[in-house]
Length: 263
Ligand code: TMP
Ligand code: ASP
Image 1 (tube, protein in one colour):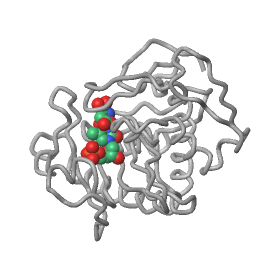
Image 2 (cartoon, rainbow, N blue to C red; image 1 turned 90 degrees about the vertical axis):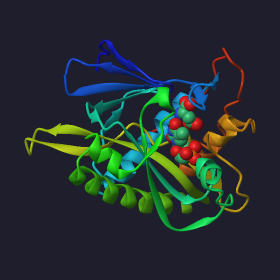
Image 3 (tube, rainbow, N blue to C red; image 1 turned 60 degrees about the horizontal axis):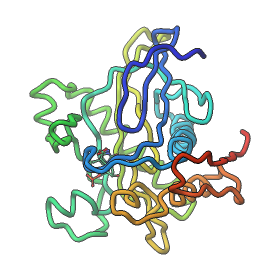
């Protein structure tokens, strides 16, 4: 698939057009940002790992009947996806209290929530992606009531599937952020809602079940070090990286050999 022109560059990914107007190439960068770009670095190997982890997770979700934008992985850093009109909303699911929830409401860190908590944020970097209610979404027509009803249902189902997937490899799914878009379905000749963007340690909080060690982007946000080792551990446990592979961190500018299991 030939890469066309750059359509959009975000903090961690770049989107390129293709000859087919309905298809896009999603490229995963090594750039890591936090607190809306205030903290910025390059974590070598992160893009490769996120490409592979997100492929694995979205493929698993698709096997469980969740419609996604993912078509196939093209190479180490790129995947082919369906073009989607993205809702300007970040959908957050929380199973355990941490991060902005503990800061905002004073809920003690680590509190296990009695049911998954859904939150919505307006996707607007200049405003720091503020928390919004469903009423804001409907009032400003960022999505319809029907869309949100369907998305909430999909989101809770995704949470159930992912909790199980991660529990099986000794990881607690603490919280995560997902995005959705609308794509054109050629068969039904209708627009449909699909899970878009990525699901990776950049967008989830993942704690080791026994030790509660963080295996996600909080290692970067909180300067805990060993960022890539955390992501690598997730990939290894998901069974998409051979045991012996080790990606050393912080060697900026150096090429790091990363081997993956063939499919
Ligand atoms: P928060 O506790 O900082 O609000 O984050 C909730 C979840 O959303 C957590 O898993 C990290 C993820 N997240 C993103 O993927 N992108 C973001 O820009 C933010 C703020 C959070
Ligand atoms: N993705 C956001 C940023 O780039 C925040 C975060 O993930 O913590 O600043």
